[in-house]
Length: 259
Length: 315
Image 1 (tube, rainbow over the protein chains, first blue to last red):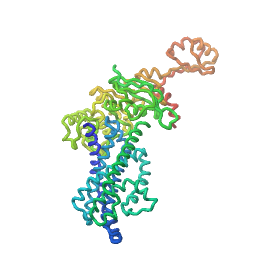
Image 2 (cartoon, chains in turn yellow, blue):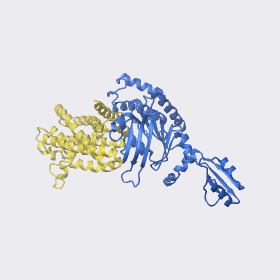
Image 3 (cartoon, rainbow over the protein chains, first blue to last red):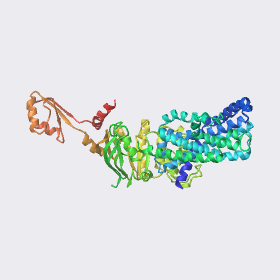
Image 4 (cartoon, rainbow over the protein chains, first blue to last red):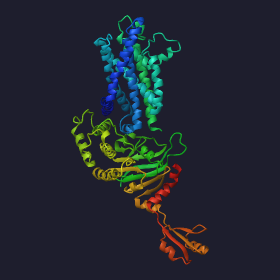
């Protein structure tokens, strides 16, 4: 009970931080305009017919998964920032389980990421992505799963890298390639042999594919776009989540006291 | 006096370090005592306080606080101590009260509520009491960003006292404060101690700050150099001596030898008094003196002498 309140307090702090950061809020509205509106719009106009599917929907699901995953992963790294700003000291000397701190942090960053998803869905509706209310509803749990996976990825990266400086330098190399390996903007139905295994180990790929499975379900394009069945994606994500969490939390707890 | 903190043969060597940051430190702190750990930068003060507050694991030795072992039962120790860190550890995005509330919930004192007014009455009263003792009633609801350095320190102390700790640790609490805020800090620490009957453990590298403590432990290069009340430390550290010289140095040397005062072969002679009074020495000398000077350095001089070697090494 006590731990649950601690998790709630840690999580709500992150959401409160977002709501008080005006420039971050503005950015979360501008970002989807750029990607879904500008990028999706131009790709749809030029390649949509040739590809034979709705390119804006394709970009929307990709960018949505990317944002949720990346925002959660990066949010977790703020634990390192906190550590260097010395706020984390306050958290780490509290008589609360280290697991609660990490869960609270993941819960908070999930909340923050979901908040940023709202303008994206609005943008998708504006650009006539064929979305039924039922599909939007189905996307909510899928989005939460994407956030949790991103959070676990963030925990693992944070624990293994140790300092914010190292993390900031290395994170782009771990996330940027995933944009292409997971097929955020580019179809990856066909991949050259040397990229196929890399794509399979990209956690983001499964989050994207799950969202696309929902958007394109029952459409003729489904087979052209969706790679695995939603069930397969869910199983892989659950396994990845568990693995990353265990590695990350153990390493994190250990690195904290034994310097 | 009951024992509140017990440190035995504490050793800490950081990974990849070639010497121990803390090298066999032992001391005890009684309940209700105001204890100061004094030493130059790099003496091992922050390392020691980090181990005592469970954020760092020792390489060897034991730490027991209020009956709880810091290595085996860190959560037990954490619940019993309040900590004011060297750097401010407040969340600048929150108000003062929100920072305190976050702490109170994390320490399991109250359930989570999103607003101050939704918090239990006991919390609201406790917060008002503490803000009253520290004179921060007017600012407690303001964003932390808008508070001065001195106010932030007060806020941290309020926060650190919410869970009614037995010991309040302060790691160089005056760092970054102006002179007035510094003086204030000592005044309200005294008030806090009187009001809450709490043990205070602080580190500092300023001698004049340590002098206000009941007991001082001087640390240098990871070892305890001296420990005791400020008066004991003074007696311990101050070496009073006479500087003597005579035209007939050999005669003077013989006389000093006969008195059991051993000095170097060549003059002028530095005579350590070691408990003798200057009067006693001089009155028993017959050789005509050409130089007579007494020297009793201040506590400051003594401290600087102790830490001088490591300060030079740092520079």
